Length: 214
Image (cartoon, rainbow, N blue to C red):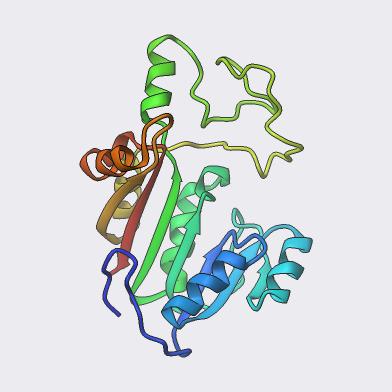
């Protein structure tokens, strides 16, 4: 397997993909079919696990803060999209990914970015960044009072990161950082947003990091 910005391809079901926070498994299955890996997933709600299994994912219920129920060095690729911001035990999150990956395995982690242009703009004017949920409603910004949803404490954003912070955490836990990327900007045409994301990923709405287990 080689990393090429999402072009990794083996089509060998001996390779295993884990999606941490797999939801209903649809994305997990699409990705695994594209690269030819056997799809596994974990999430913390039973109905999501049932849906993921119905969609062809080998899914297990798990509390990510306390541990992921798979053997050491089991997976070739681990992905986690918009999950780390919900996790209380961030260091344990990285430790579990490291434990679960085979040597030379890859991980891709993405999350909201606290230094996105819109969050920086809000903070310049003394307001709360929208990516951080300090309550079940938005507070401290123009969205004040807007319901975040019928969210339990496990679904709110409890920690928000910058690109350098993700890099430092990954390095601290023994990973090689292969790439840091960003994507998305509000109220900007897509072609300009794509250019800005490549030029200055640390100011995008979302940031991601590509890691290799050494």
